[in-house]
Structures are given as C-alpha cells and as structure tokens.
Image (cartoon, rainbow, N blue to C red):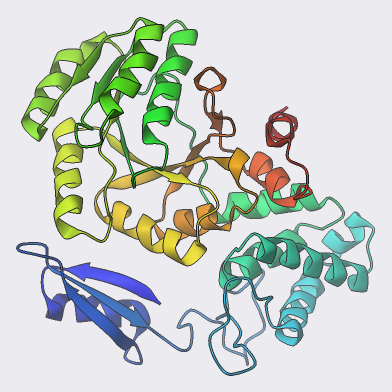
Length: 374
C-alpha cells in the first residue's frame, strides 16, 4: 500500500497505474486543500516486481510480496516471512553462490537457521516484512558466519548513508513533527561545527511552539555564535543571504502535522526560501507503517536526508528503516544521547547493523555505538 499525490485525480490514477499496474486497488482519496491537489491511497495484491516462479532466481535476490496471516489478512510488520517460501528462495540463492556459504564455514542447514534468526531479530524491531526479507536474504548471500558484517553489507545495498559534514556548504533546514527533537538536533549540529573550529549561524523559524526560541537561544549563547529569529519565508530568505558567507547555516523549523495540508504547505515555503537541504528529523521507536507514511509526506515536500533521534530511549528501530525506505531518504546521522555536547553520530551501515543485532536488554546504547564506529 502506498500514497500518491498529484494536482488532480486523473494524474493521481495515472501514477497509481504506472507504479502498480491495472490491478491496483484505490483504497481512499483525499483533497489536500486549495491548490494542494489530491492524495490517493492505493494497494496491490501481487508485487509487479516479483520474479516469475518459472524463472530461476537471479543472483540479485528477488523482492517478493509479504506473506498473508492465517486468516488471509496481509501480514503485519512483526510477522516472519513465510517459512516455506523463505527457505525456497534462500536455498536457490545459495545454489548460485556456494563459495560464499563455504567461506563462512557453515552448512546450508546452518545458514538457513542463521538467516531465520536474523529475520526474527529484524521482525522484533518492527522491520516491515518485505524489507526484512530483502535484508535477510541479502545478508545470507554475503555469508552469515559474520552476522553483523553480512547485515551491514545488506544495509549498504538497500540504503544510502550520507552523514552531514561539520560544515555543510548549503543551509541545513531541519523539518519534522512536533517533539521529534529538531531543536536539539540543530543545537548538536552547531556544537559539532564549533568544536571543530567552524563559525556557524543558527536561525530559528519556530516561533509557533512556546519556548522553542528560548531553548535554542540558550544552547547557541553557550556556543557564542549568532542566532537569528524569523517569522516568515521572506525573513528567512533574507537571513540566509546575510549569513551565507559567514559559515554553515542551520535552521530550526516549527514541528508540523504531516497530514495537515496547510501546515505542510507552510513548511514547504520555508524550505524553498532557505535554498538549502531539507533534513527530516524523526525519533526512533515509532510505528513502522506510520513512520513510512510520514516520511513520504516530508519527502514530497523536499526532504532528502534523515536524522534519527532518541535511539537511547527506544529499543526498536524498524520505524527509522521504514521511513528511509518509503521516503527514499539518505540516512545521515543518529542521536544516541540527550546531551548537546555529545553531538550527532554519523549513520553508517556497520553501526546500524550492530545496533539492530545487539542484545535488547543492553541499555548502554552509547557504548554499543562507539564500538560500532570504532
């Protein structure tokens, strides 16, 4: 199931057919306010990208539709891939890459068992079934003698990891929902640059939330860097032009309801006025289906990267993966500690693999992350 937006219904239906084919089912449609076009929710029962069962599976492992639950409903994200079909695809992949399994020192039965264990772990995190299957099968193709290394390679194949540099050349516009941690992320980005000896300018466009400007100002004052408050896209554009030659510019925007067309439009105007790069800030631990839908909305409004926050306060990270996949967002940075001085860690496939596979009872996530990036 996926959302499609377009200026009118006919264009939306054309997008649905181009993506899902003639068998697509229109579930709902929503008018997005004056000038906002329409949003159509559509679904399909069979993945049009699935491999033909008569065709031998290619070396690049196929993506198949998720299994159905016992009552015929679509499987929820925390359900395992269908064991029989999973084994069949896994064995077919191993037949084409016997050297990989041999290098890992595992028999085919052992490798299947290891792959099923990885699928269970990813399911515990709430990773959607189709993404779970793709990651697990890709990891198995690299040999599961080293599960973390194999999962890291699978993550690297499925996602793009592009951490924000300490001194971005274009203004960084942080967007997201209320309470996602945008203001703290903005302060952390500024602190990281200052600690590297780089002068920055911080702009707050969040004059909606009570205390937001004061909170950010407290952080910025400690860094002894200039901060500007703006109340409109026009003021933001002027502030960015003034600060552009003085070093990196980090912009905090108001948290919005992504399902309110007017709020999305207001945010889009701020992003356009800044002439920078919109980065979605999202907290970990959210529902994966909801996170994916939210990320798609922000991606439509111009977001291209994702910062995950509050990893220290959650144990399940499937929502962040679903957001990156559905929004086609590059994973930039991760916030694994609530303190400004500790900054934002770079998102890497190896670090994320270690966090996904760590013992969920181990609360020392900062230590786990430091080991991952060492």
